[in-house]
Length: 370
Image (cartoon, rainbow, N blue to C red; front, top):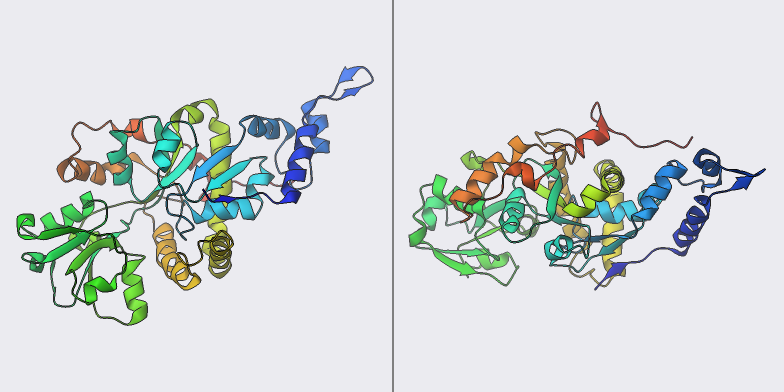
């Protein structure tokens, strides 16, 4: 597994934090937490009591199922660590950037946080993986698209042709085909293992269900002709990237979960205002951890160029804020097109209040040094 390691300076800071939370005796009387707060390192922005609470939760493990991708719910966690935002809130965070089985690890309690591509993914996994709660949704745009060679002028043209997919035909892609009047029985479905988007322009398949921020952007950069169909083109509402937490951990450490999200969202704020620096940092981290070839800077810049707009244009409020109404459309899709029968109620799968409470008038509440 690939882990992002702590810098020696941060380890030293945490040792100082531990000593700062010990009870002090002055003139025969126990010192209060407020008195002990004077012992906290300068970079800590919260009180001694809050610091001790966050430290007591132990090491928080985040699983990135998509490596070092410049995507919300991922890049912000990496940068919250690099920029010292977790340290400022006395959080000890370990990042596993090679954990494709993030939901299993979080559900079982071996990790605490992971991110998925959409609410549909959360719902489909909920049938098999309990003990998971979604705490943040980063946009109201579905990340999926169907991109085709230039001979395919409409989705209806896919009848009699070959449509590639990865892992499964996503519910929203199936809903797109249905909305376009496509007879799916007339489409040859091919499970793909090659992520090279030029297999479409070279005619090995006629179309692929992919990520709008990835393969199509690569084809654009290469100047190759293709067509792309988005869920919104057919009036379909989706969601972009979801952060999940272990439900038991959330119940026992709600304030700690809130601070983890606060630090991550602070880093997301940085990535939305300092896009080039953000892309530089995540690309360098990938290179430092032997994943540079999988996440080259030019690709990261294209990805974040698209996905950052999905965050900015979310219809449901500030970054990370989610609502039950936001998920309702996909809830119906996974039942109609994802084969999910009798799914848990949406209120059992998500917490719409935790991240919303981190904002005041649309601005993230970030502690200031007192």
